[in-house]
Image (cartoon, rainbow, N blue to C red; front, side, top):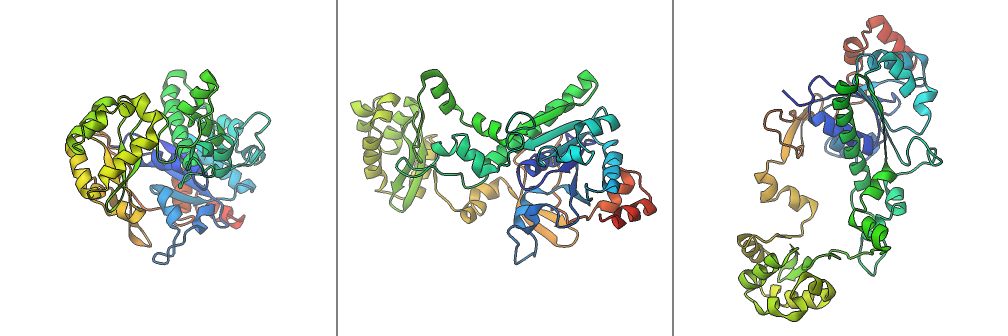
Amino acid sequence: MTALEGIRVLDFTRVLAGPYCTLVLGDLGAEIIKIENPQGGDDTRGFNISPTLDFSTYFLAVNRNKKSVAIDIRTTEGRDAIHAMAANADVVIENYRSGVMDRYGIGYEDLAKVNSQLIFASVSAYGRDGPLKDRPGYDPIVQAESGFMSLTGEPDGQPMRTGVSIADMFTGMFAGQAILAALIARDKIGRGQRIDVPLFDTSVNMLHHAANAFLVDEMVMGRYGNSNALAQPVGLFTASDGPLMVTMTNNRLYKRFCEDVLERPDLFDDPRFVDNAARVENREALTDELNSVLMADTRSNWITKLSAAGIPGGEVRDVGQALTSVETEARQMIVDQPHPRLGTIRGVRSPMTLSETPVRDPVAAPDLGADTDEVLRDIAGYDDAQIAALKAAGN
């Protein structure tokens, strides 16, 4: 049994933030019914088309364990089908522009009349109310506007967006948490509710300690690259064969590092590095001293010594090296996913491990509309004639 077995989600989301939310819910066992435009479906079906599979690797990454139903929400027949499915659903999640769902008669107020137990979640750039609700926005824009980019990159370089759309992904995870909370609350209050999780709000939350530094002391923190403004030594150092990432956040670890790993106790006794505050103030001198020692041996040997001493350290890898590493293999992170047309597709498993209600075995992302007939029969209660009429209307 999975944790969310019996929970049904109508998923009207596209691209990343919303689909990432339903990816997590699907891994936990919820039935995810992805409602897609019959004319092309989710935009990401056209991203990163694999020459091996002739299928989008981007779409595969965030749409496992989902059913695809092709319905045109602009038609009366499409609206009626959505109402019929919503009557037997637990959650609706959408990331259309503000007002779109209401315009087609499938907004929160419309569907709550059909099912008062329904939880209706919206993922948007700036929220579903307020002066910015109609403003379009994507991950790169909110990373820039929220201050998040100002903290990322080299100190003397330009602000930098993260390599993956982390604001989208965090928003998806926050939305997933809110939905789980609303499911629990439903048992207490006897009804569903509306949820709003904007990318901008999420990105501001992601400012973390930098936000409090400003709110308490009016300190505007900047970029520190791979280093750290609060603790040292933290950052990218140089071994004889390449870069090495090392992180220590207290005197105990730094003392052990100097004595047991580097065999240089003088670097702990040096007044410039005697405590964390001193090391932060003298980070450049500390980096020079550590690099002069670390360059005498290889990354592999240093990592072995660091691990033996209980100090975090690791080499810098590209994606291919990470996915074929001993750590990835040991954690069995790469799994086979069946697909009815494409056969077996390798993918990255969920990071969640639950002892009593494990995540479901992954099934690869579906073809557009692959489950339309099945879902309309089983959930909307449609017969063959109704399905044919729906399709004839452009669905």
